[in-house]
Length: 533
Image (cartoon, rainbow, N blue to C red):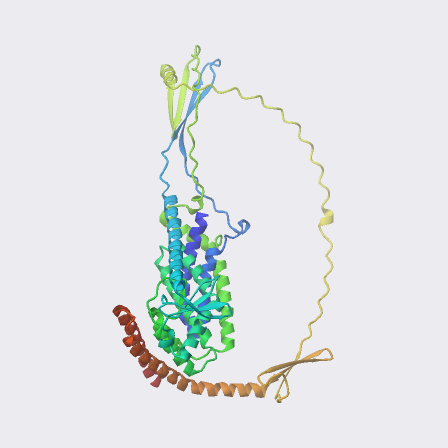
């Protein structure tokens, strides 16, 4: 069990590092929803059980010595003297189980981390619901106003809530309130609250890992960006400007929590930049989704416990730490001291000369005559019992004669299976398609079947029209981007003035928010200048 946990923690850390490296390029090419889906990879790896035993290679494990054995052999010359042996065991002192202590500390830290955040979340929800006032209910989600809410936020998995501050209607206009509510409802629709608890569980297992803390914050940032894309899908440029004003007004300092706030200062710049991006095509989104499925499947198969990659990582850890992970789960058995009866005294040898041979740590010591008798007097050894008589083995029956193998030299060939029928391959035709052909003018390929014969018509005129429309949209994209950047810059100016006028924020929070907005404005102006060049 412990060895599997070690492999799972290491593999999930490597997958977190991979997602941190590729999330930004994936977001630019395929959109924020696809980048957010990549975070399922480390969580699924922690829940992946080891591969079945028959799939795994058996690795020989080293044998640790448990005690040191000393053997003594008494060899009398006279035939009348019995043969005796003496065995003395010198058990080693039991070592301190540092490995079990370390794993116990890890488990205690993980449980304490999760319980502390669970209790904080319960207290936070209690403050919100203590003086809450019911405003509305949308699709089973209760909309409330509470003095404990610093901005719009969503919380609750079983009982779902969206909370707004008391002055929500005064600080936000009607359009901003509508978009803020759509944002928080989107978190409930997408299951982001449950995903946050899973992410907290992963972080609890990695409580000692600084990379996991960074990955958790990046996961929450990607979650907000993906939800923003869901809210703004199909909306106009004016709505994007209103939405930018709403998230800037809701700026506040964030913390590790299972609730979904409308906005935190730490990811302000990234979210405002995302608002200026153009909408991605459905084909690109489907391609990105297929790529994520392939990456997740490949990552799980490559890093699963029992694979060659996992075995290689385990060997490196064992070489670095000197601890054999495969033997951690097997606690060493501490043998209780055996109650050895006092052996009877060895009868004196009356005839011949006595020899005593002692073997200790592969070293051989021999005593003869008087020295041997003195050694036996100080170290009496029990007399070995007489071994039982060896039973006579019964006669082995004769092996039957092997039948002739001549009939197997040329075995008859099995009958060949019948060839499957050829599929009905459609006939492909290229031509211009009129307005009445197909279900819609946007269909580029029309399929039909008549008399058992399939026909596929490729509409060249519709393809040319779509290409021309794409060229026109591409020609206008630069102007649209410039307008979007200018609109976002105007939103930042408005947000900066709004934050400077707010008195419910501390000076530290106001300085942090203004610094983030100023940095975003400088970067946007530089991008607008580079686009003009």
